[in-house]
Image 1 (tube, rainbow, N blue to C red):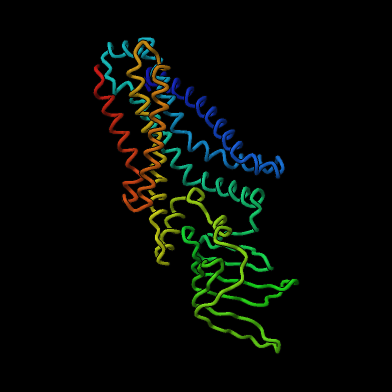
Image 2 (cartoon, rainbow, N blue to C red):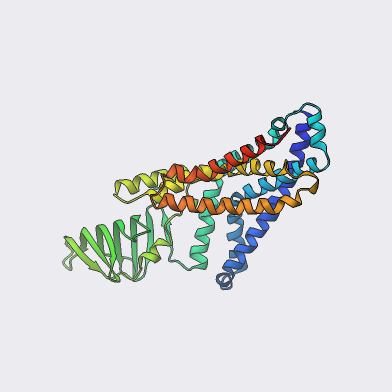
Length: 357
């Protein structure tokens, strides 16, 4: 590594780490104030446990902004002190000078991709389960590796849900275990599908298994019945795993299960494509930061800091719009996930390449 490269790397990493720490703290504070009314009813240890597990997710979200600021300030200071001019007089082109910063942006993106497939989903699941059970007071539940849900319902009942369609509230594959106070099985209800309609659950294509007074086991099939179950689709939806709690492999398996059950999985296909595209936002932001830094001139980087904030906000708005269009079926999932990255990469490259040497 050349002296110039080491110098750029040192400048970048110092600003990146500082920005990341500040942005992490701000994210945690904003989230804390947003949830403060709910946290007032729980102990401080629960709050601490939630944020310890949630910090990697906050870091994943603010990492691109930290890269943007690191690229802007590290290269901008060199422009301000004529160091960049001296490099160009030494016959170094702009692309050669900024190459280490682009490589660092790519390294951060690859690190985000690896963390997003390993540690972050696990930590998110722990954080959100802590919030669901200890803060929102959701009934105890357990999820299997296949995303089946075991849920303790009111009235001494246990529910086994194979698949819950969050958008409609429909359940595909429902088993209800009704127990006596001493936990003896009184009745088991199996249904191929359960639908919430007119304030109650309608079960379709299943059977009721129970033990008669004479000790004989009886199975009664049914086509359509209603059942008195206090839990609503909204209650059950709280325990469904969010995409941020799953790796790409787990989300892909979940999409396949949805497809086999005839459930529209476009929303999750977009989320799957967005997992990789979101990780590579950092290298896009590095390019944008470089483009602004090369145009700072004598006015210094602070003159462009506000513009960088505007760019970050515009990216966020465009990304949200693109994801929404994808979930609505207007754009293909891959296009919806990668369109903002493509547009901002093109804009950044165009800005860098049009700067006079």
